[in-house]
Image 1 (cartoon, one colour):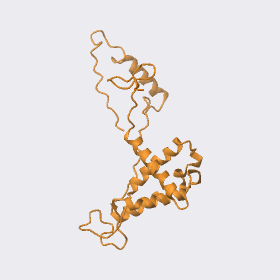
Image 2 (cartoon, rainbow, N blue to C red):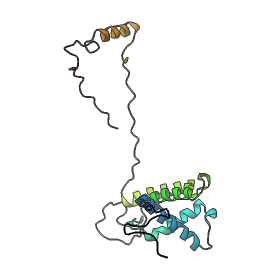
Image 3 (cartoon, rainbow, N blue to C red):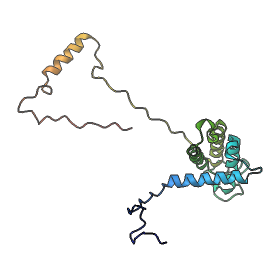
Image 4 (cartoon, rainbow, N blue to C red):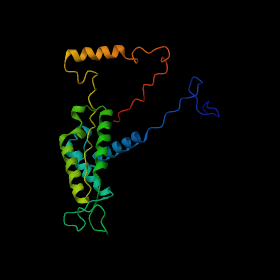
Length: 206
């Protein structure tokens, strides 16, 4: 039996147009592909592994397996171009997965694991061994490629200023109160009302 869908598209059983599913974001699509790739790796592992058996060591093994698909030239210590960010010619050093790609991959797999009903406590992608492995990859690639990875420093916001900064005694405080009480800014005259120029407030940049 043909469906009751009209020319405008599919309809639900109640006769109302079916709501179109929003397309997944680029991040969600990539996360799904990464997760499927990892599960395929576990199935093809010798001996095969199930997710419950997976540990941080297996994840590191997976990251090393991905190096064969890398596109980043990482010079060996004996290469003439070792430590040069822009080598003048080709060399026989292998291609590897860049540290940034591996770091982002682990972040996606870590989230995908917990979305698959995994608990943070058993998440193999959050193991300390992986953090150490990624740190070593970052440092070794930085030396080999001559491109240091600088950790971004957190911007510190200045402390909120107080209206009483610089007041050292009760007398100073009282003089400030008297000044504010007598200030035309506090008690504007009728001719001044609505025409006071407070100036532009400078916005603090982060």
